[in-house]
Length: 74
Image (cartoon, rainbow, N blue to C red; front, top):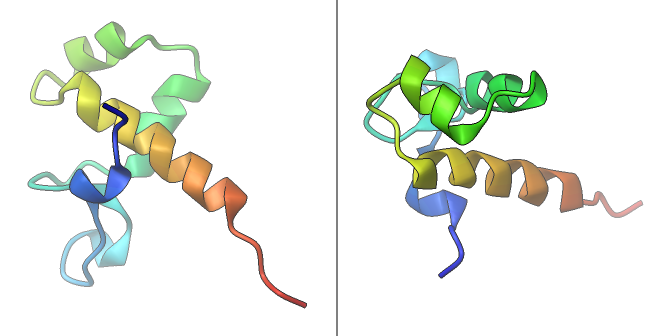
């Protein structure tokens, strides 16, 4: 079953000034994407942040994919 980012990521003004973060945490999506961009594996990220799950990390990638597909009509 594919991971849907909306099940794992939220953005509210009172947490991290509205930056998207993993639900129930103060871990921003940008931090996870930064780890992935730096070449960390899912297992290495979990070792750094043991409260995370592989599904949460996959949700960050799904979120990034969704943003990359976003188009503004001209």
